[in-house]
Image (tube, rainbow, N blue to C red):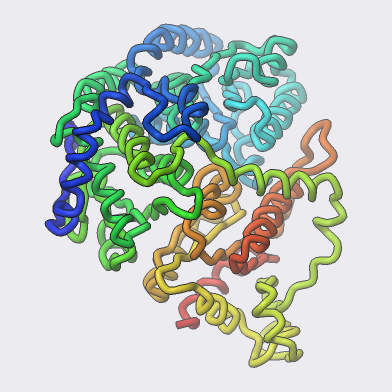
Length: 556
């Protein structure tokens, strides 16, 4: 693997000069060693209570060692029964780390962090005789994960398979899922350290169990983290975590509130997606924070042409426009970025261990599910353009009141020719100077993968830093920042019709209804907070995505 040595390089001279006094401050205050010693006072009195139960991640390279034998024993048991297909039901911290570990080690792991019926149906269509489901939830009440559990349990039973023998649970002690697993007699329950928050849990059972069952070498991963821990707890100006945290904070203080992440040959697959949650959920609160923007590579729009409001960070060797670069093995990088994020929280004067704004969208979605009529009634598009129903922000809708028929499809309730490109152009113009665009696709991230091409296209054509998230996956990641961070984002939601839906056993809603409620609920919360939200509903997903891409290209 490239870059086994753990390093952080600040290649931009101006940024290095701005970071230097912060490095000196952190060294003088012995912040790194205090983080390693799990000192909860580092983030102020308001954060002390939460921090006191959220710092065990600093010693996971030691405390997670017993998992190595437990996981290997279960893996051998399952393989002896012909069970070698691992499906993970988990969200956020329960899915992102094992996905990175498995992809980097090139072992097969099917990750379900979606409520899209098509994507879940594809996972069900695999060979269930060879399948074990890992149900992973820290709280034990994650609605997406519970839905997956119910659906798979029924599918196992319908195929004559003992569901209890095919379900493995990862959760916190005493959670509702832990109690259910005991009642149902599930195959194995791994209880994670409750003093580790979800986004810091890469080296707990949440990260290690699914990846280890899939065949990843978790002993090596812990060895890598152990070697890094010896460096990251030192109060030295050369400490990579101190340098990375100081660079982020210095850039933020200078107005660069966005951190653009690109892989430059790290040998790690998908690391930016994991780091995205860690940074966004840890720092995006109290109207401040760092917005991570994961891009395809160092030549991608937003990285190669980053403006003054963004800091390009290379995951791998320094290249091109990168102002900061990190190298190291996967286990070392996990610990480095966790240390750096926690330390940056101190410099930004926020609590890096809470997520005060996440619950709002969940509450709104639950309210809609309690009254399913709200999901199907009263929704009238502002415009319909071929395969795209347009639900424009109130301000745009009010300005577009005429009715026009034109082009090859219906175009109703708008001024001008009512085209999708017109509405997009007007919507994108609502972005404030220095703001950002978030593209949120409540679609199938496998079958509708082309939706991700919208990010670079929009970034290139608008000049805005542009993020892309699959819904509801991003709600457990950047969703906190959207509500709690710098309030200068605009939000493009993309939803799609479902050809086939899936019932959630013993629940009064389908998977498609849950997916729709999550989109509408999050949009409602963002709108209430004064942020523009444009929702585009694709009545035909393939045709709608093609039409949307054309509209983006026309909307300059």
